[in-house]
Length: 167
Length: 78
Image (cartoon, rainbow over all chains, first blue to last red; front, side):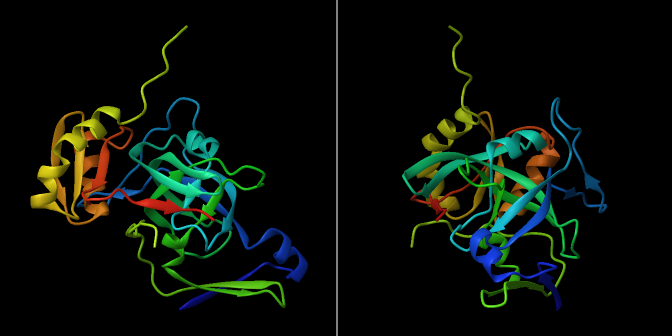
């Protein structure tokens, strides 16, 4: 079990105001063939292969979410359309497949994960890390000290999408 | 005025809806992979379904990977 401590200089007020945030690198899914080779796509016109962005750990989000801008920047293919309930009602959104890396930390890369695409208005972040990713970790939030921690056990790269029904 | 571009996977989702009742009887809770009106197959989990789709159609292509369930899920962001 490896334990990662955030942030470098804990501040309880900052954590209260901004929440637990970290930098992630989003890219196309890393698909391995039977020979163990990764299949990486060519970047589409106007897109990058990988893009770094700030992310917020959001225990209120059942799935990991990217903004349309982030999805477009990386050029992620669509695999489904689904429904997303949020303040203001239920939206129809697209689902994409991505990989997520944590470049500044020794947290295992998630090679294949389904992400939902929706606007995150009035927030300086482009990614919500939802409970699908949190299901891999022990996440500890210490509001008193301003620290938070991620502990992970193994390096499994795949996250099975959870049932997404309202309950 | 130019027509709006079609929503991604419109053909596949329409096709899925026409087959859903039938598939619920034989493939409930499995993941189906559909490209156009072509059914690649039914798979036990998303990862397997997606990887088979990439092998067949390529990683830069949109194709549908959908779990066959009676009621479409509603995901939540608070």
